[in-house]
Amino acid sequence: MSTLILVEHEGGEIRPATLSVVTAAAAIGGDVHLLVAGSDAAGVADKAAAITGVSKVMLADSPAYANELAENLSALVVKHAEGYSHILFAATAAGKNVMPRVAALLDVSGISDIIEVKSEDTFVRPIYAGNALATVKSSDSVKVMGVRTTAFDAAAAEGGSASVETVEAGEANDKVSFVGQELSQSDRPELTSADIVVSGGRGMQSGENFAMLDDIAGKLNAAVGASRAAVDAGFVPNEYQVGQTGKVVAPDLYLAVGISGAIQHLAGMKDSKVIVAINKDEEAPIFQVADYGLVADLFDALPELSAALDS
Amino acid sequence: MKIIVGVKRVLDYNVKARVKADKSGIELANVKMSMNPFDEIAVEEALRIKEAGNADEVIAVSIGPSQSQETIRTALAMGADRGILIETDEQLQPLAIAKLFKHLVEKEEPGLVVLGKQAIDDDSNQTGQMLSAMTGMSQATFASKVEFDGDHLKVTREVDAGLESIKVSLPSIITADLRLNEPRYAKLPNIMKAKKKPLEVIPVADTGVDVSSGLSVVEVNEPPKREAGIIVNSVAELVEKLRNEAKVI
Image (cartoon, rainbow over all chains, first blue to last red; front, top):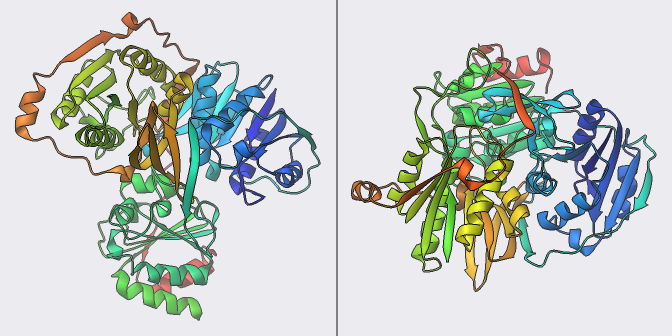
């Protein structure tokens, strides 16, 4: 039994999501091999080789892999899939783009968003925005899966000493090309891996008012998130969205401000260790999942909170 | 150019899913069912592309039980030209759904397939990607903007760090994200007209497509409940609790 993991990386660094996937692979058992696809990615392969629990790293270096195009990555994974019992991806936007293609090319079912490994062929995944957990069993010869990274601790990035082998890269698909990107610039920790997340909802009333959350996030070294309502209202960009169709987070502390707590939002944050809700509506569903609730007008509470954090 | 758009009948967005007592799945008897919200966005985008003169026909396709005809009628009332239901009472996995769409793609030869990025029941987020891999049509998932440029599309995609744009050649498969558009409501006269639009029903067995799956559901459970917390009376008390009780700040 052996597992192949497609490594996610950017700017020469391995994304934390991949470290969680390594932990999921360890729970399955058997050898864990990583595939690094990138342009000038030898440095990434060396870092991948240092991850605890990894026994082999394959490096496919080609400009075709510079921008995570799904066509190119899926073809590469399939090219090197022979012999593996499991092929894992992080359930990130990039991973979700590739995983089902690999499953389809191998003619097996894909298994999205696993949160628990019951055995080598049985896994648990949330359905219906996390309102139910399905235990699924696969009889496919190879299990192709996405791993919900918040459900698995990160493997140690150091301590391993895997071998690195250069493997043949595939052709670049000529039907698709990368044009550009607009990434949000922030000094804050990344939303899905931050220890503390401060999120705002429709109650924030405007994008300008998110400055109050930024201020508090700065004092707590937290990431800033938002509900779908706040994103749809244009207060903040889409990458802030926490929920069923946005990002899933599970920080030590989740502070929900002016968020009513629709089930679609709860799906993205209810596995946080401690949840705090500030809302002026005491009937808001968010209070049913909050460890600490404060019924207050956020425009009074946030300045007070900011001041209290200084003391 | 034809556009195929996928419409799935799912538990309504506003209805809370309840696990059946025998743990076999979710209770779907006597609850409101609707079109998957992402598919509404997909239908809207297909219609806008047609209205802009970039397509001639929009075909709404559903795969599911007989009642999925209602979902197709909703798409027809929004403005789709005709419907196809591949009828099955089985809960098919995305792999089988993608194979059935491929079957229709080979028959209809659309220039574009527009699907929702995921269905809000099984939250798989797989069908579009699988269909692209199976057909060789280009893939543009999580789309928040679609622009025509000759025989290419420029698609803006929602990714974890923001937005990225890619250029894909036609034929292509697009999966719709939330902010691609605001779907229209069907107007009453159009709902009446939709009843007369053609809707072909094809039993799944007649497609000759292998819909077997290596994946089975063992059981479905309620998620663990969070214990109810406490209401604090002031910001000062909140900060004190977070520092000394929860020890998270």
